[in-house]
Image 1 (cartoon, rainbow over the protein chains, first blue to last red):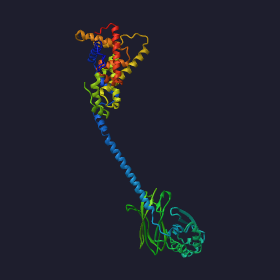
Image 2 (cartoon, chains in turn brown, orange; image 1 turned 180 degrees about the vertical axis):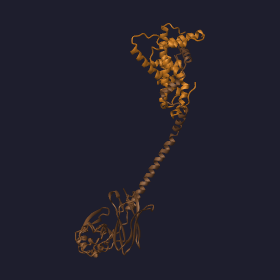
Image 3 (cartoon, each protein chain N blue to C red; image 1 turned 45 degrees about the vertical axis):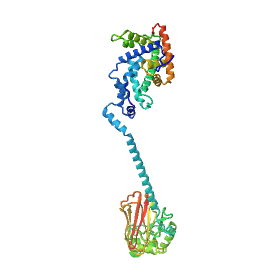
Image 4 (cartoon, each protein chain N blue to C red; image 1 turned 90 degrees about the vertical axis):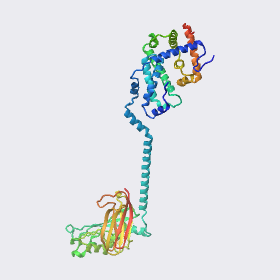
Length: 322
Length: 195
């Protein structure tokens, strides 16, 4: 026996069965009537919106998905690249800022000499004749260049009083003089030495107290026997103001001259006017605490410390990170 | 017979859902007719056909363009009908255990085959024989029944039927021969004259 393509066995009986089934099939196919809501039932089950406009919009968006994906990834890569570039640039700036020029042989000396700011207002009505008035000298001592230590040194009042003679009466405080001493720089270890200088009638402190009675001196001349500083130097070129770190600006004035110290940002905008006025001969230290003229902490970035006196003009970059 | 082309299928796979309306339009008659041959009940056939289209839409991304779309759709149809019949039989056996089978669901088929116009005697004879064959076919397995429906009623080749049923062509051929021989024997025992 031989099967054809439809597996039919050649023979009249099998052929008649097939023909009978085909006849039934034709009758069935011709009798099938599909109701009108057939397709709607399917769409209802699928849950698809058939609104043509919705479909058109949806299909348009769907067909453009590759474009959207490409645009998204392009944006992502661009943003990533910009972020990496910016962070790299900031790192470079900080690197430049932290590489402040070092002065050979100066480190040891800077350890020995620190910034000092004394602000003492002696008010006559509160002062008692001959009383031992404790004048607090705030001493900024920088060891490794970054750590600023603060120590209080009580200067012996009799030593000062005995030399504050412009008022004529014993005890300079009674003269109504207001003396503020600052800038005498020394390490905490040097405090004793400084005190000794004062007690022994150290000419600087005593004379300043006497000559400037009634004035407020923010930065006073340092002790005379401290050797001459370099003309201009900056310590702590990278600071975090939030941690209380500050920039110490040290400079030496050979003779009385006008001095200007200002802080500018990278775009040349004036951030803070640290000092602008006359200075007598001596070593001075100014402190910039990372704040602007309004007392607000500046943003992280690079800032230029500008120093000028009659014969020098210097610019040094410092970094502020928060 | 009209076939949907592969481009349209790709567009449908890419989300152009309105293409599916065309698929429904082209295939609803054929799918429903095939369902009826299994279910022998128009209501069940329509429900089954709708389920087939929903399944086709849901699984359209699995169509791999290795066969005609109609072959893939018929495979879904046959599987759906077989599963639905199994469910119905299980339900009936649970709910109407011990009740007589009645006409076995052939009343609607007989109504369809009733001559609306005057038919030649030979045509009438073939219709009667066809109905008898289908009744006997109920005693066969689903695979054997499917082979006969696809080959002798729908007119598919052994290869196409094999694709639809997921069987090798040779198995379809041998199954068809075996089923037809048994049918012939059963019909002869019942006194049906096969010529």
